[in-house]
Length: 361
Image (cartoon, one colour):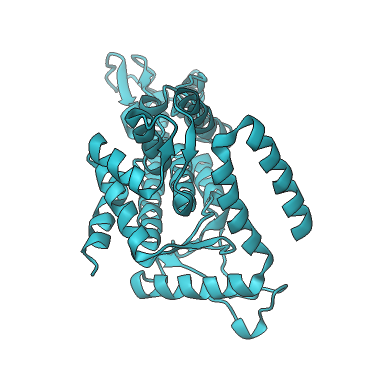
């Protein structure tokens, strides 16, 4: 498997060298990290390190990293404690299905993935209808004692739900919609609280511990019955030095403060270089890598398309190789945010941790 993986990456590198040179450095770092997946004894050691770091800082009912059984681990075998739970994305979808129905929940998730890229899928109408619920059968509900009001907005995009306007009258439908809306709001509020917890934990791993999981996709995050978030799969642990952590911390603060001059300075110090050294391109790359990728940054393009656009304006000579996996964490956290209809600013979420990292001797 390791040889096949190496051959596949070699083919991908050859293609990128000709067609997508801006991706070469990223691919090289990913290759270095992914090759560690084939040594379970190394993964066990990394798992023990991260588990120890997390246990010192976070109660296990909030954050739970499985503990390896080192005496049973070998290069080909990894043994750790069992953690009950379901994947976080599954838990969110199940909660939404309870709140608004399974079909509407699926469309809700799909719609917001596109909405943050500036694409209108028309999914809002589906959710609006789901919240309104079934039409009242004649004679099953006496609304004569209830007053009727003009059309009323009961939800808005600012809270992660589309604007939902119920027509005048229809008291049965209004009550049905309000009950569903209340449940949907509770699901989003709880899920966003979990996202805030994940953002903080991964920022802490990167900026304070200097040892972090470079692959925290939703499938590697479990929701336990007691409410804990379990972080699993440590085959791609990246370690960065204190000097590198302070470099990244300075860039995070500059991004959070929207200080383009400081962003350019710190990004170049970290290793970002382009052919023309166009400040706008380097600043935009820094935003894309370590902060956010909403339509106001990318003009509605996805991350790959926008990176190609920047390459056409000012070709990339080198990127900050040692920080590629931290960038991957940033991108994955934003992806989880899109699932919840929330545009995430990673720099804003990590700003306090960045100051904490700079205060370390």
